Image (cartoon, rainbow, N blue to C red; front, side, top):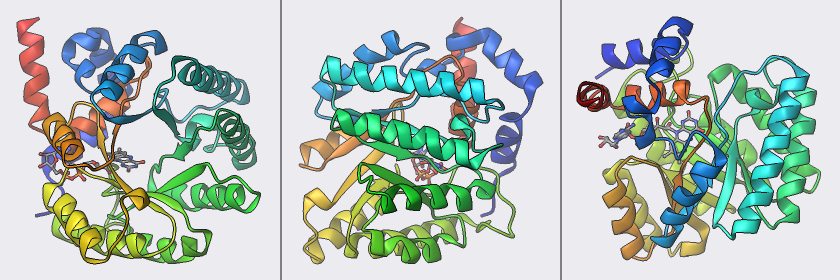
Length: 307
Ligand SMILES: Cc1cc2nc3c(=O)[nH]c(=O)nc-3n(C[C@H](O)[C@H](O)[C@H](O)COP(=O)(O)OP(=O)(O)OC[C@H]3O[C@@H](n4cnc5c(N)ncnc54)[C@H](O)[C@@H]3O)c2cc1C
């Protein structure tokens, strides 16, 4: 089956300022709180601690993307420094994931590089780790270039993401292999044309398996970021068969998605990290979560009606 009409509409709505204004007006009441740890860092900290207390690792992100001025990126860098300091002060088992367009990638690659390098260094000072999320296909080349620069200049506490819906990802994985990369594997959350991405879900899933098996048998660390139980069980069986030790991989899921499965994997002895973002700029993130499962729209509408 190809990309559903519902998914297309929701991903298009993610870029619509009019719909964005409407949804934001109804705020957390609409149900964004299911997927977002809080509208502020203060609100997110107890949520992250609660997840840690259940045996889950966490990462967090100050929501936001596509900023357009250097001054804005400076404020984002300051907020991430504050976040890293707070994580350390609170003793949370939380690392940080960020988007390079939040740090200036859309208008100045060199600025984004400087900004992320400063944050990776700051994180290293706390013994912490920074994951660079992957955004739209047009950002893949510069994002991987920056990841490579960071690793080649001695920053090891940083990881990247590959999306199995992109045709190019298997070639990217092979090119990154000599770095023993720390990679999160995802299916991909953006609206992409058939020129660059598999339109059929079965091809995206098959590509995920190929990426996962190659990454797990290579050097480095693999974060298997999916809620797809077939893929998760495949990873477990593959790791057992090939003697891949548990410290070489972990599972990752999103806050608010399949929480029982998260805890079940912890009970079975696997490392599970829950990605729990925060911040007032949650609209686009929420729309991508709805697009992954258009049935979530019903969940939101029910909340709206209950008011
Ligand atoms: C930790 C983490 C980090 C991510 N980082 C990125 C990134 O950097 N770049 C990027 O493009 N994408 C990222 N994604 C999103 C990813 O690309 C997928 O869009 C998302 O994970 C849904 O795909 P799936 O692998 O869970 O499989 P699917 O086949 O979409 O879903 C499998 C099952 O999981 C459940 N499920 C999945 N999504 C939802 C949802 N939103 N609500 C409720 N149930 C759901 C359903 O039961 C579904 O049947 C990330 C995902 C995770 C978990």
